[in-house]
Length: 184
Image (cartoon, rainbow, N blue to C red; front, side, top):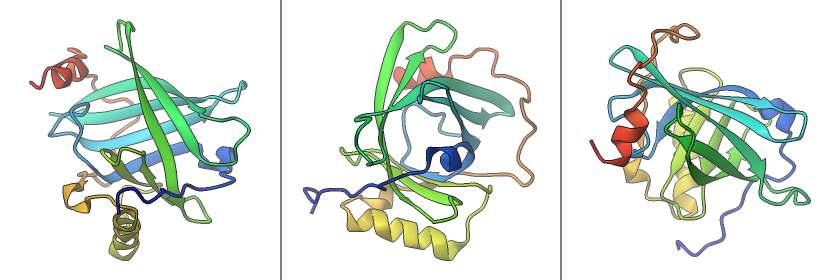
C-alpha cells in the first residue's frame, strides 16, 4: 500500500493558496514544541515565484517562529510539489533544513488542505479558520489513509478562539528549534 504513488493537486492556484492557514492536526514533529498550540503558517508569494513561509506556534504563552522559503520542485510541472528550506536556528541561519511539501488535496474554495510528503513521515491538515468541521476533518483523514499514511499518529493542534494577536510575546530564548533537534 505504501508504494502507491501519492497523487498531488495539479494546477494549484498559488495566488489563492497564499495567506494564513491554521494547523488543525499534524504528525508530531521534533521540530515543534510538544505543547505547541495555535500553530499556523502564513505564505506570501514573492516576485520571483518563490513563497515566503512563516511558521508560528505558541508555547507557554510565548510565540516561537521560523521563516523559510518554498519553491516548486519542477517549475514546468503543474503538480503541487514543493521544497521548503528553513535555516536553524532562526537567529543564526547556518544549518539549512530542507523538506518536502506536497499539497495532496485542497477544496475548490481553498479553505482547507491536506499536506504530506513522499516518506509519509509528515502530515498536516490545514484550514483557513482555527477550527474545521468534523465531517471535513474525517474526510481529509480518510484521504490520507487511502494513500498509505498511518493516521493513528495524527494529533489535533489546540487552537484558541479567537486566535492570538499578530505577534504576542516572543520566545526570547528562540531555541525551541534547537532544543527540539537535541530532543529536549
